[in-house]
Image (cartoon, rainbow, N blue to C red; front, top):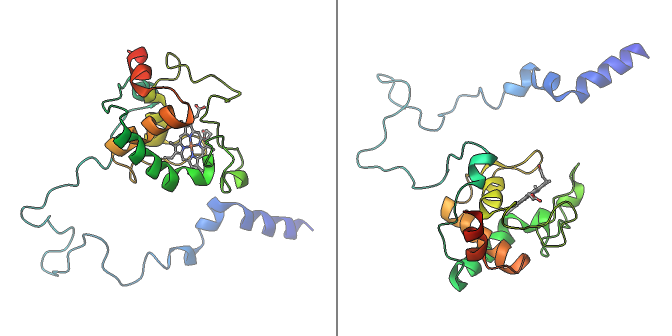
Length: 184
Ligand code: HEC
């Protein structure tokens, strides 16, 4: 019985399971890794090709949620922005937060903690822009939460603000410009 419970514990603990030699096999195969040099005379990382430029704005380095909350929304919540935000919300957020934004998405239902309610019917807090400014929503997308993953690599900073505008205007039915002004 003792042996069995030890075996079970070993397989259940992901940290222990990671340490098995075969868990590295895929990583250690003979292959060229991203940006690895193929020139045996110049091993290591290949320099970037001439005139290549980094992709703009894929990650915004917001220090923490506190700093994010102080950010002002730079994008006006006009029709175009809200429409773009709606499309992105559909792709990245609906799975968990649901079409309604209330946290009733199909994937969200399987999480250890249900996704929080992004609408005005939020039972934990109101979405009063004084306490929950646009930057709060932007921060969650940039940094993620305890369970929610970060979307900083999937959405550019600009795209994240479009999503904020959609959440404010459509899900919370409040004009984002007003919310942004109140946050100042
Ligand atoms: C994998 C599921 C998942 C996805 C996808 C997801 N979220 Fe979340 N979200 C959560 C969970 C769970 C929480 C609860 C807080 C936590 O994880 O710390 C949360 C919390 C939040 C909060 C905080 C709400 C509050 O009351 O303060 C915001 C804002 C938010 N999400 C926005 C978004 C937006 C916008 C997207 C799409 C870009 C998104 N989330 C995508 C799971 C998800």
